[in-house]
Each structure stands twice: as C-alpha cells, then as structure tokens.
Length: 503
Image (cartoon, rainbow, N blue to C red):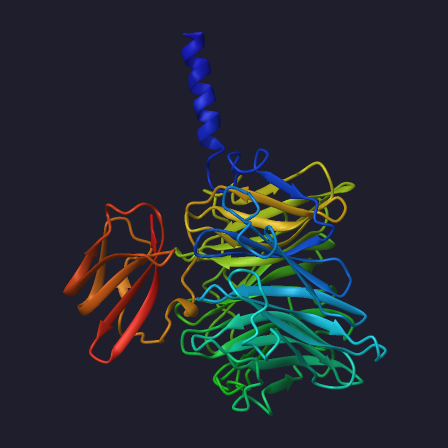
C-alpha cells in the first residue's frame, strides 16, 4: 500500500509540474540553458521550424546572433557554426528588438553611434537572410541607418507589415525633449516616401519627454506604439503609459482618443513603463509593462486595455487596469504575448533579496489572474544567480521560452510548460484578404472554411506540399503531427496564405 501511495504521490507531483507555468524539465538542464556568449541575451524569436534565434548585445559596435534548435543545440546551418557576427564600426551600437519575416529573413533594430560625431546616435536596421548572412538586397549592404535630427535617435522596436515594409519605432531628441520617432522602410531598404515626411514621423504626446518602446500592427493596417511619457500626471517628474495610434500613411488616427494620443496615469507619484503592445482581434489595445504603486511603494507587473476609441476598457478588471505583485520587491516586466484563447502572458524580472528571478503571469480576458497557470496565475522561478529576463516567445505547442542573461555575459534561456499557442498576427495573413478565413486555428481534426475553396495547398514548415484539393469547404488534418503548417487558399482573384497550428 505504501508503494502504491508513493507512486501516486510521484505521479501527482509530475502532473503538477507539467502544468502550465512550471519549468519544462525536459529542456536543457532541468528547464534552464546558459550559453557563454560573451554577450547578454536581448531578444528571442522562434521561427516556423521551432528554432530559436537569439539577438545579443555587449556594449560595443557589434550585433551577434545565435540560432538554437528546439532541442537546444547550436544550428550549424546558420552563420558560422550557429553564430552570426555583424560588425557595424563606429563607436558603439546596441541591439534592441528583432523580428523574423514570413520568408525567414531576420530584421534587427537598435542604435548606432558614429565615432566621428560625439553623442550622435542614429537608428540602425539590419536584415539577415534565413541562413544568417547579410541580405544585400536590403539597401545594398543589409544595413541602414536613419537619422531624424543631429543628436540622439534610438530605435527600440520593429514590426513587419503584410506587404513586407518595416516599421521601426523609438525616439528622437529634438534638443529640448525626446519625441516618439517612427520610420517606415521599403522591402529594398529605402525609406518609404509615402509615409509621413520622407518616410519618417515624430510625435509629441504630452509636451515633455516621450519614447516609443513597442509597436503593433492591427489587422486593418493601422498601428500603435506604446511609449513612456512625462508631463501628463500631476508632476512632470514621473513617466506614464502613453499610446499613439496611426493611420497607414503615418498620420495620427483621430478616431482614437480624438487626437490619436492617450496617456494612462497608473501612479501619479511614480514611474510607469510600458514594454509591449498588442491588438486584440476586436481592435482593443493591450499594453503591458510595470507600474510603481503607492500602496506597495514598488514596481509591479501591469496591463492596461483600451477600447478602440482610446478610453479605458472597464470590462477589463473593472477599470481597464490590472496590476499584481510577484516578489517582495520590484517586479519589472519586459515582454508580453497575446495567446490564441485571448489570455495574456507577461514576463520579466523579479527582485528576490540579493538575486533576481524569472517572473511570469497569465491573465484572463476579463483582467484576472488565470489560476490554471503556475501558482494562482503566477510563476516566480529562481536560477540561483542573477538572472535578468529581457524577452519571451511561445512555441507552436504553447511552451514558453524566456531569454535574458545570467551572472556575467551569458545567454540565459528557460522553458516553461504552456498549452496555448500565440494568436496569429497580421503577418500570417499575407495578402490581407480578411473575407477568406479558416477555423479553428489551432486545429486538432477538421479545418473548416467559411466558403468553398476553389483550390488549397497545405505545406509543411519546411516547404513540402502535404496535400491539395479543389472545391472543398473543410480539410481533414487529424492524421498530421503537431506543428506549424502553411495553407495557401484561392478563390477567384483572391489568394491568401495562412499559418496553421496543428495541436
């Protein structure tokens, strides 16, 4: 009997720790992986083959990228034995964000400082081919610098439009204040003259310092940036969540908060910092980050949801604002992901005595902690060293990858159990034909269409044709293994390519 009880106890323990939000101990060393790179892990993107591309920085004039397989081995088909090093020259450069295009090419942004111009920093944008080499079809060199003024221009975030054009957001120092700065770049690496003035837009939110830290594109092509902004609260000394929403040509969208701009003051006497932004399928805007709360006198994780007109959505945690503490000191969020069931993941760093830990929460669509995740919706996981979390991505099976640094200049990765994949973004709808749709996605057995498909072709993530058909309203995928597939469908003169996730 004791043996049976012991087996049951072991089974219950194992099942408990395969629950969403707990470490996936099948990955790396009991869920962790540390790679001595001589650089800090800054950003992570999981490609369609579930390989992890890691962008790093080490405060010099070099960007360095690594690609690991899902089993945590360096992918020797990428760069030189899994590593690509891009020397930019100049005095300094810092990588801030990265995205993988639908064709597998990698776009990375940050700033570059010219050694010949003191304090002169410009946006830097580079594009790599899928194999890690510089893409010389982009501005002839694979690299582009963008200057807004003659002082400090820093890019913090990048997003890819359906047509392949690249939106880069950050700030430009005007001489008195920092303003939101956005550039749009054509597929060939030139500035898009149909956007703003000569491909560039600057925006002042509240008459003081602003800096766009994140950017997201809606299904209609409009986009929004999340910015820290000063000057909206009772004092100009504290930063608040700022949002600016734009039309496709770079003009402010006045259907949003009458002037395209909105500031949310969570704490009137502390700094609030948005780190991530996303559009829900209904057009509402989510902003995730950290807020300084007067009640606890510390930073806590925070999520804000705005209606399409820019007002706070009171159906989300009663007032549109959700905050929660994880540890006993500051909690600093750094990444947010919107999942396919509408729930929200927020990840960051949790101060714990003289160490820092990984912090994760999952929040429901109504703005409450999801108690099926971690311990009552939260995960605080120590590594036994100083671990700083910078970014997060979700694999096709829903497992959660976090990226940052541990100890000295090391790439630090951890994988957590999760069962819900990402919501499909606008990049998954290549031609933006919204009247051709298939569901459910993710799918287990039958993929349905809202109209009869003239033709369809289903491809593996590696590009192999798996099956095709004509004049069908459903596609049986029950026999296919779990993973990511690409579905090309055509009706009359309309063609759509969609990413399909098979569970």
